[in-house]
Image 1 (cartoon, rainbow, N blue to C red):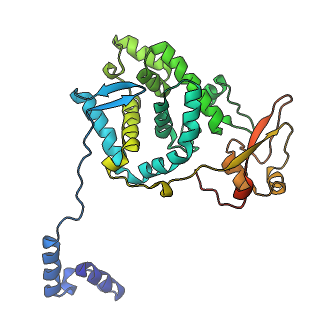
Image 2: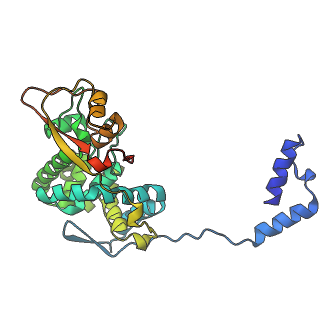
Length: 312
């Protein structure tokens, strides 16, 4: 440390930064200190579990290839601390709503972890143009009755997009007969996955040679599930107080155009920023409502009107 302080000192007085300008006794002290200081950072790899249950089915990891693929995702998500901590914080806010819809749609609750690896539980936009928690592409969104217009993008509507994702997963499950293949199909596309398996004459996901992203996909889901369900085991000590709470809202039905959302929000007692945070599917400064259609807009409940809503 003394050596580096001296280095900056010589820079300030315009001297050449060479060891000739540093007294021998200081150089020796610094070197001795460096050699004797123990390593402050000790990392150990997380130990993969022998089994993880997903959608009611146990998956064991005695096979070396399968074990290493899970191990990779456990290491990545354990040591990508900032990312995984935000998973935990956001999950506390969004999992109750997502789980309720999964239950309503008869889709296993573990698929909430698919939303985690797709978007990090935020309204993400991918380089290819996929949007929302469930990362729908425009054509797929329209196929699953999510509206995309100049003023509305329902890929960013958590409730509607979760129902749409459930419909996709149930259709894939019916086609392939297993939930792990339904998960892989969500990433690869049902037709692409079917083609890969037919060409290779295989029937199980773990026996299929896939592109790198899809090959990792199901193992990423398993790893995130394992870490979020057993955070202390992976040295994450996030208290409930540190996690994000649910927004307190009320909803109103809108059947007519709103020409200026900013003015409209002001009349309701809050502002455009809060309106957009609660309703990110409102993508313009106005809302156009087609004849015979209506929208439910979330508003902050009375006690929440002046609160600073956190980003998500």
